[in-house]
Amino acid sequence: MPADRPGHSDRTRRTMHQGLSLASIRSRICLFFWLCLAALPASAQAAPGMPGMLEADSTPAREIMGLSHFVLLITGSIFAVVGGLLVYVIIRFRAREADAEHEPAQVYGSVQVELAWTVIPVLIVVVLFLTTARIIFAIQDAPEPASALDVTVIGHQFWWEFRYPKLGIVTANELHVPVGTPGKPFPTYLELLSADVDHSFWVPQLGGKTDLIPNHPNKMWIDPEKPGVYLGQCAQFCGVEHAKMLLRVYADTPEQFEAWVKNEQRPGAQDQAVEAGRHVFETQACMNCHTISGTAAKGTFGPDLTHMMSRATIAAGAADNTPENLNAWIKNPNDFKPGALMPVMQLSDEQVNELVAYLSTLH
Ligand code: HEC
Ligand SMILES: [Cu+2]
Image 1 (cartoon, helix red, strand yellow):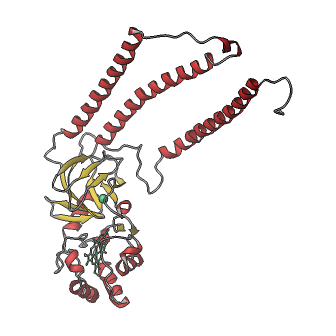
Image 2 (spheres, rainbow, N blue to C red):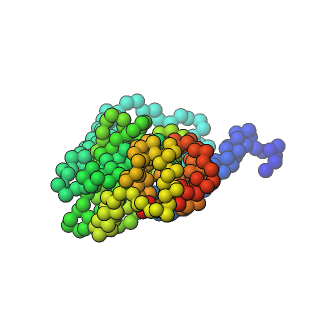
Image 3 (tube, protein in one colour):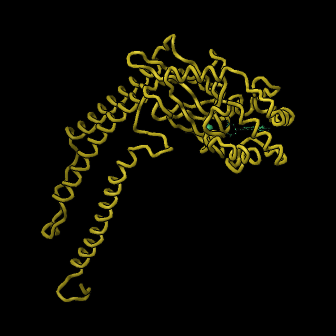
């Protein structure tokens, strides 16, 4: 509409202009909501290779999920009531031509209204607080059954060490725990420690986040019910490679778990055919940082490699455990994880090939 069209006062033109931009804002808000709605089903389903945040499969995770649904219900209702009233008021009491001359009724103070908007929110906060506290204590104070499995988890920059003190097993990055059977849960109690800085153990399907703090042991427990692999990751910024500090929890059937334990308890394989690689390992600095039981290598700065072939990934999930990746990792760990705390060892291609041949026998 031409701006200079006669018969339109300044005021009308201003209103029309505002109306136009309001309409475009409205359509943008609509678009945003539709996008959110469309994204919901996608985000509710765990993408492959991503931890599933909305698929609790262990008692602590399920309790936390129930709590968050409850909190969402209450806060969602508040949002609906407040938002609904706001929309109603905006439409019902919008500015009209006829209102231009007089101002709206002015209300000063109302004891009832002020009491209501003080007391009701306080009650809601108390309910939220008590429910949250109840769930936190129910999880934290759950008595540890005598049959429970104990694992010590030690966070390192940028990998996980798992120790099973009663079973004499040390492994890295891939935690194996047994599943319970209906009526016979088999929880795993984790003692969380750190070798350097703060880390956080987080496998969303199994439990809440718990920090690994130097000199301050923390505890948590999980009791997965379905066999399978649960993904997680370090949830506390611990240095440049924090994002590549991934976790895999294998929930094994009792038979699988027993077989895994048996295998892990054996000393490292000693295959004469790969003697050359073993020699390189034992005469280079590798042995100062890594342990391979049954050899001279007793270092603890890096992951225990005694049964490294029983793991699907290397470098805390940064790469699949294949001979090519092992080769590339030993040549230059920074290719996978810039800033990883394993040095470039300046070995010849032949030495690296021998090393990989040796490591590949460590089942
Ligand atoms: C200064 C200590 C140090 C030395 C020396 C060292 N490494 Fe490492 N290594 C590490 C650390 C730390 C990691 C874990 C890196 C990460 O995931 O962030 C690692 C990871 C590895 C891994 C992956 C293990 C897994 O399960 O994720 C392999 C294999 C490995 N090193 C082999 C070697 C070999 C072979 C040598 C000798 C040529 C060697 N390392 C020398 C510290 C060292
Ligand atoms: Cu970390």
